[in-house]
Length: 336
Image (cartoon, rainbow, N blue to C red; front, side, top):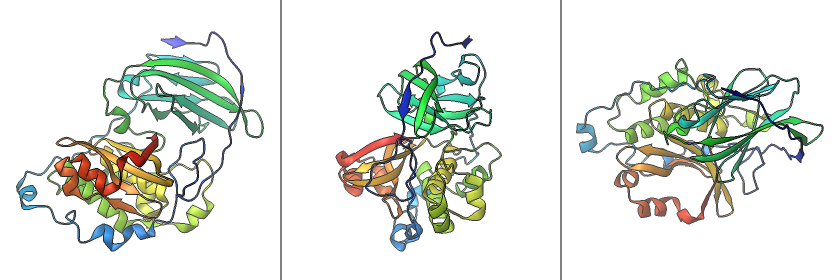
C-alpha cells in the first residue's frame, strides 16, 4: 500500500549542526551521536584484571555451553506499507519489529531524517543520499511517530520536504535492539559477526558471552587519536574496518560491541545521556535469566568499564545502582 501526502507542508528550521569530538559535560548536538574521547585508558588493569569477570564460577563452568550460532536479523523494505513522494520513500512495512526504512532519491546533497516518537524524543540523522534504503530504529515503543525528511535550504536552514505520521504497535519489544541500523550496521556476512560468534563459543551464559566480547574489544582495539581529531561531521562507524584495523574512536568501539552482542541474539541498547553534569555512554543488555541490565558496559568520558557480573547475575537493582552510581542521576538522551 502506497501513500502520497495530502498536503506538503514546508517550514524552515534552524538546525545547528556541530561535531563533538570528545565526551564531555557539554550539551550534545541536535543530531544524536555516540561521542568520542580518548579511550586508550579503557585497557587499564582495573577494567580487566582482579575481577570475577575473568574467572567464571565453578557452577557456571559446569553448565552447558550456550549456542553461539549467529542470529542476524535482516531488515526488509518489503513494500507492503509505503509513504512516498517523488524523491522520498518511507517503508513502514515492519514497524511492528521496531524499525522503519528510508531512502532519498532527490538531488539535494544535505538531507536529514527526523523521527519523533510518542515520548516526544527527537532523533535526527543524516541520510546518505545513495538512493538505497537505510534502517532506523523505533526506540520509543508503541504509539504515534512523526517521520520527516528535511532538505537543506542554505546554511543551517532546513525545509520539511516530506512528512508522515505512523501509528506503530511494537510486537517485538527487543526488535529495535536486535536489528542492525544506520549506527550499528552489520549483515550475516560481516566479519564482526563471525568474530562475535568465535568469542562466544566457550560461554556458558549470555553474561559470559558479554564478558568475553568486552574483554576482547578493550584489549585488542586501540584508540585512534588521529581519527578522533580529524573525524568529519556525520561520521558513521564501519564495524569490519574497525575489526580489521584494530583501532577506532569510541563510536566504533560501541558499534562493534553492539554488533557482536546483537548477532548473538542478545538485545543491546547503545545509550547516551548524562549522570549529573557529566556526559556518559553506556550499553544495556537483556539477559534471559535477569531481564534488562542497565549500564552493564559504561563509557565515562575516558574509559569503558564492565559492571561486576556477580551484581548483574543477582538481578539486584539496588546493588547494581550502587555500583554505577545513583541511578536516578542517569538521564538517557538517546537509545539506538
